[in-house]
Structures are given as structure tokens and as C-alpha cells.
Image (tube, rainbow, N blue to C red; front, top):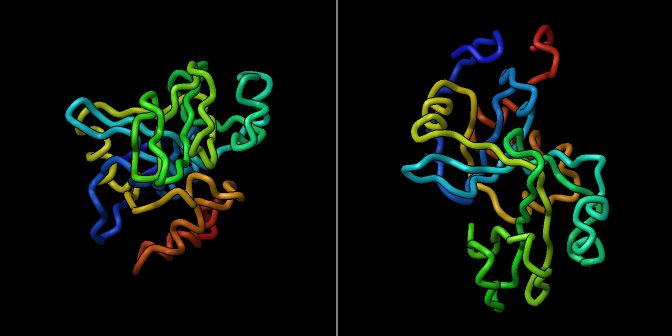
Length: 197
């Protein structure tokens, strides 16, 4: 597969099929700068396509400057994250909920702990342990992501809330790969400079 002039080679190992709640990890040679060394959380995957957000790209934009009603929410953090190249002028929240509390009806479940939060609603704090807010998202038409995985552009792996709310998102790509079994763990050692690989 050729992406931005780079030929990708798929690894010869089984990877889980894309599903809601799984992580997509960009292959090291994926040439699209929007996805270089990114980790994405899949929010929807069905017959209409796939919808995901990049979870490891904090921006320099504060939440206060774009969503002041969420800025004083103790669980929101300080910065807006770059969720992907589509609809960058829109925002969505991923919330971590206490399992003992029913999330609001406006929160669409992703996993038992995580839900997509409607940011147009008044901040709902009961049972909300943390929230990250993302500008934009990534999307694929039906079958497109499966083809890109088969061609070696992405690795699909399991993940959890600890990945979404990782305190050091800049190093998440390498750490998610390092914890994978077999050959995939070695991908974490891939240098940014192709001449060194």
C-alpha cells in the first residue's frame, strides 16, 4: 500500500478486527501527517463506516477558550485534544463514568466505563470521573478501514480507559505498542528517521 509516497508492509500476525472501544495504532511509516504516531479510540464501527478520535494529541488550546462552561469542571483537564482532521471546528467529549452510576441519557456508551458526551448539554458531573474534549474526528467509509488494516497502515489492539486518560499522551503510541505480544511489540522501537531502521 502506498500512502503519501511510502510503501507499507503489513505484519504477518493476527490482529483483532475493528470494533467499538478498540484502539487503532498508526503504523510507523503511515505518511499522513494527521496520523503520524497516533492512537485512536473507535467510537462507532458498523455497516455505515467507522468513527474514531485521536487520543494522544493534546493541543495548545485551552478548554476555557472554546468551552468555558466545561473549564471549571474539575474532571475536564486544561487542554483541548486534536481528535482528527474531520470537522475540526466541532468538539466532542469522552467521559469516564463510575460504573455504579448511570450515565446521562445524552452520553452514548462506548465501553462499560466510557461514553461520548454531548457537550451542548449542561455539564453532567454525577458519576463522571474524568472527561477529555476533542476537536474533530477521523472517519472511514464502510470497508475502508478494514482495507487499510489489511494493507499495514493500522494495528487494531485492545485498550481501556487508562489509555484515553493517560497522563503522558505524547508517549502513548510507543507504550501501547510495547505491551503487545510478539512481533508487534518491536514496532515500538521504530525510529522516526527511516534511515535508522
